[in-house]
Length: 323
Image 1 (cartoon, rainbow, N blue to C red):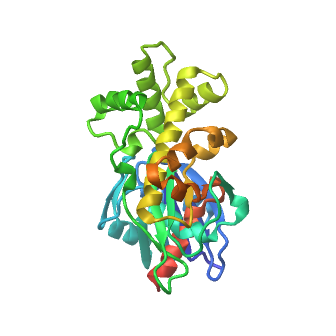
Image 2 (cartoon, helix red, strand yellow):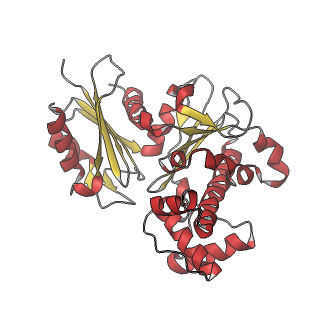
């Protein structure tokens, strides 16, 4: 039976691909390719199709870490740029749907089973209420689901909430953000709550502390220095990262009225394991003054990224778009 759907989850670092058969929700031949190894998205897709031995399917859906506002796509955290029309014609797709990657992930949230989720604080979700979604990886993705009347599956949100202005709550945070401001001008949430953001936080902490520390160039190095070597500056940076994430997630919960819960996607938080539970995340999530009791009841869940849920969301996007 020929493959009829090609699905892709395109981030700033990796592209995840799979295909589906008609009437079968299963993902086949899921592969992860490093974006940097391919000059264009076309090259990555051709490599995948060749490796798994299938022809270009009838239709395709891409979730991509980028705003999708027209035919032209230019990635924020990677060099790829392409025309949707040109990709559709190059592979002969009868249909190509391109949406934001966190919009795709939001579409998949109702499909997630309890074994793919780990709760961090809060109580029970309220059925039918809005759901928030935020996740740190190469960048910071933000989305959600709202449930208008007669819409049990929810309507996903498409925005760029990772680029909202980041706020400080303590003098130390203010001093750290001032260092980032000197480098970037505008300090968005993504400047601190992302892979490169964690590296920048570590160097900013060193600057503020006027301490030595060690040179790092990856989030993995900061995380290892914090959790394995117990380096105090790395621990400070990692807790700032978690606190800023909690601040952004709490703001999102208030904005959406997300009593249906807040989901945490992306690859960074799952790697922190149970240490994350004791970080400042939950305190900062709830720390909104008079609305602390409101937020205290809202559950947060960490999504297991091994399930590649955004690919299922891309498939749902094709269903919603219709034949």
